[in-house]
Length: 242
Image 1 (cartoon, helix red, strand yellow):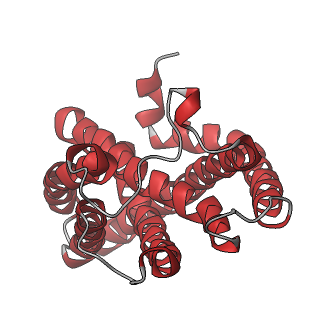
Image 2: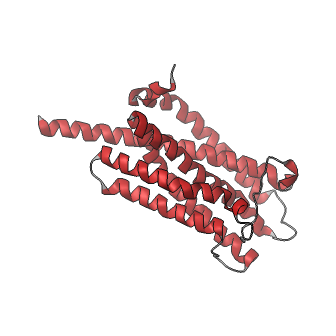
Image 3: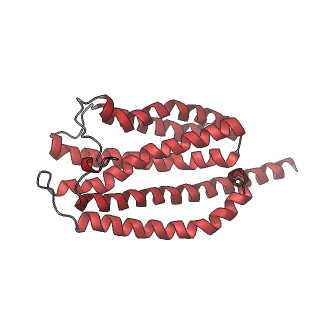
């Protein structure tokens, strides 16, 4: 079966009917175990004390803020090239979810940064690009709400998504581009010796997996809602014409 068959709303709804209960159960389990492990069963850091445990919220939220935009970019490109409505509805569904993850990452970063850097905010390259990404998220969500014609809204938000991808990319790699920034390097790397200590590494991996599952679950739920809303609008339009 081709993946493009799931661009059909009926196929998508049938698939997610089967998948969602499993994804939801995995999400709840992974979040409960990962956050409990990270916050209650890891020691304080010898330098940062208990504030280091914000890592179990901050890093997964920041990861998904960037990857959510990447998913929106792919879905928007599919819409612009192939005009599949499910793809652009999935992008629309991901917008508020990504916005929330970005807000969590900014808030937890400020809370973590204040005792470490002595300030709630600094115009660090990664922080600044992340703030701009947050503004793009706000613009994306607002643009969908501001335009009545769904196809026009889909076209304009897809273009906005392509533009905002620059800042999603910078948010991910700003530490590598500008070494003079306050923000530390990545907490995880393909080189094992660059990773944080195992006592933090394993619960962090679980929390990251839990946030990925949470994102998938929320996007599937919101996409199903968007499809139902589009069906209701179509039925109402038919009734007005009848």
